[in-house]
Image 1 (cartoon, rainbow, N blue to C red):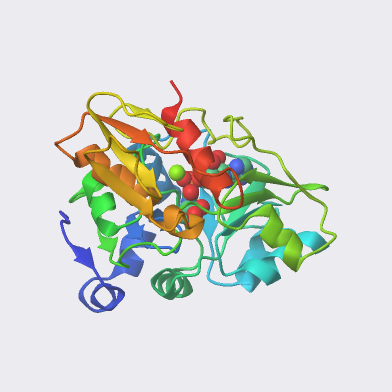
Image 2 (cartoon, protein in one colour):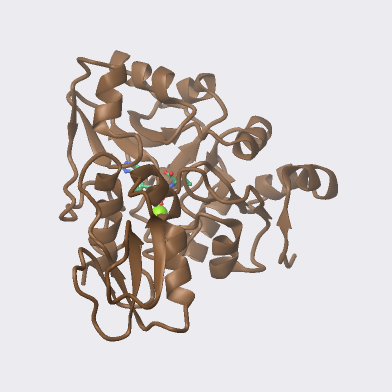
Length: 319
Ligand code: TXA
Ligand code: MG
């Protein structure tokens, strides 16, 4: 089947038997509040293999399993008491928990690269939840080619994969950065990938939780998929820029640099949530823009959500 269209959940339910499609190893573009995912049934190796092939993703890099509700996660994974508190406090939402996998789980080992743990998340998006309630657990990495910019709109998914699978249209993603990943397999718990759910926000809600940051914005590799070079646009990119060079388009955070002729604004008011929401869309747009050959990004404060933005930027700039 050749797909070129975006579909709504209603259209998918009525026009097309998506459940059979997924059960037979089909894949689907899935909106979440963070970024768009590329989803397959978590219990079906055929769909999982398609995800790895179409993304050109190395097989050692496991996928996140998306669930409709906590009861479903309990069937597949073991929770410590702190892990359960995190789940109850922040799910549904932009949080992924690494948990020991239960032996009788139906998740196929190819989905998590045969590791003893699974990465679980309940997304906070009506379309994702609507689909998950019908299908059960779906394995879904971000819907981009491995190493490239993450997709925060259906058009970004089509940019990479037009015509190759149906994409559920959920409009632009609210959050715009991938989920915070916490390794909850041991104590202390460790944040492996920073996201909009920051250490400070977690400590505010759960004071006393033994939780530490195990990432560094210098680009440490802490999960199989946290490559030093990642999230890269096609054009050369520099970050922390104070002075523009010839041919550069500017991604601004607040009032743009004086020499900027071409710029895209992350947030005029220097609001970090707004900057996170606009971040990948700005990079996609700059990549397409004909009037500049290179990308320069103004400094983003390394605090709160700025830490997660800078994590992505450092990897985008890594050579
Ligand atoms: O917001 C998100 O998390 C999005 C949406 C679609 O949910 N997904 C996403 O997936 O960002 P992906 O595949 O782009 O990033 C998942 C990260 C990778 O770095 C991977 O190595 C890590 O999670 N991961 C997944 N399962 C793991 C496991 N069992 N053990 C260690 N790391 C794991
Ligand atoms: Mg990704």
